[in-house]
Every structure is written in C-alpha cells, then in structure tokens.
Length: 287
Image 1: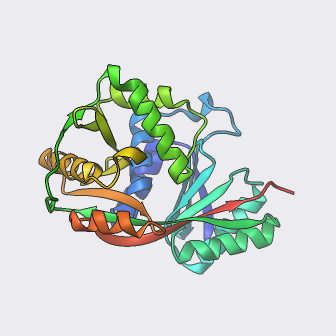
Image 2: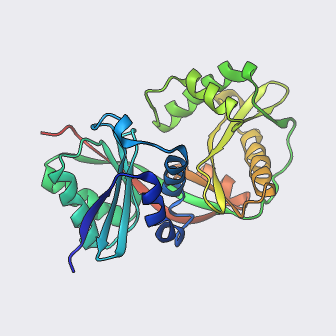
C-alpha cells in the first residue's frame, strides 16, 4: 500500500495516535513529544486560531502503520521524525500540494536531507542548510570541578538580566522569535523554569522545557562573554540536571550545535551521551 498523508485537527486525539510511535525513540523525538503533550494538555482549539497560522499535525502512514510524524507550531518550522524515503517523498508532495507557507524543515539526519531535497525540487524554492544539532541524554551527572557561586531560581527582580542573557543567547545561536525577550523572561520566571548561577551577581542562566513521560529538556544555557571559561554554565547545568533527575525523571535531554566542539565536550564530561544528529533546512520565499 502506498504511503499517504493524514492530517489531524484535535491535539488530544493526535497525541493518542502518535505517542506510542514517538516513545520508541523518546530521546530522539523529545522535542516533538514535548510540543504534542503541551498542546494536548492546554486544550488547543483549532477554531480559535487563524487558519493560516494553525499548527500542523500530520502523519504519513502505510495503512495503519505510522511511517513518520510531522509537527509545525506557529514558528513556521516543521519538525519531522526519521522515516523511509517513500514517506519523505509523500510528505514533500503534500507540502507542495498544500502550498506550505513554512520556512524551515527540521529532522533527523540523514533522512531529513531526502525530504529537503525533494521538497526543494518540487516547490522550486531554494534550500539552505543552516544548523546541525546533536541531541544528548543524561541519566547520571558526572560532577565537574566546583566553582564559586550557587544556583538559584530566578525571581521577578531578575527579569532584565534574564532578558539581556536571552538576547545574547539568540544572537549567538540565531534562534530568534517575534516575542520580546522581557515577555519571555517574565513567562519563564513565572513558571519557575529559569535558573541563574550567581557569584554573587548573575553570571550564567539555564532553563528547562518539553517534558516527556521519562525526561525533560535543558535549554537556554548561556553565559555572557565576560564570564565565560570559568565553569559557571557547566556547574549550573550539572546542578539543574541533578535537580530535574531528583524530581523523579529518568533522563535529561540537551541539544548542542555540532559546530561548537567545545560545548559538546563539556556536556559529554557531565554525563550527556550523544544519541542522534539533526539538521535544519531553510527555504526561500515561494515563487
């Protein structure tokens, strides 16, 4: 039976349909699992969202068997699991047929390359590889050399510092969004998800997001240039990871840039083990 695309509209039903498939590769699919769980839990209603901006919840299936899962939120980036070449071709054709307005495709390498190539060929949009990432998992912290300072939860008075650190993180990584950094800082502080290393002033930050059934993702790890190479972020990630494990989780997840071997080595020394690689392909304007 040929592969066919199935569009889903109800996040709760979509979660129930794909969660077992995604959990076969929980670490590799942690980003999608976190997004889908959040949408299902928040009770997202598609009728309340502009049709052009609504999230896309898709599967490509061979009969009842799922071959890949594709999710797109309002960020215009579609996140795709690994899948066979035929399923990737089916997805590429569906994107063209539906005049996809997204800007990037993100997925596990090397299978995402087949999707990006086929979609660019069919759509006549230029493609560009913009980021190579590694996903890591940690089950036990390997403690680094201690440094001065302590980890503490962010407070409302830290909002401007956190916003400044976020702006620095976005400048370093190119991961920008339309949301103001002060608004993002306020949200993460209110949700008690942002932490600082203070010595005695804030010198590094880290947060967490995207809970899966067995783990959670550490993100927003940043040290301003004047405080780097002193072990602050390393100790902050170690302490935050241990706290997240102590709360009953089996894993912590973390994404790193393949182009930054220094950060990859640092996280691996903490006990983070590389699981798989992913790529982000960006596309020019539709012709």
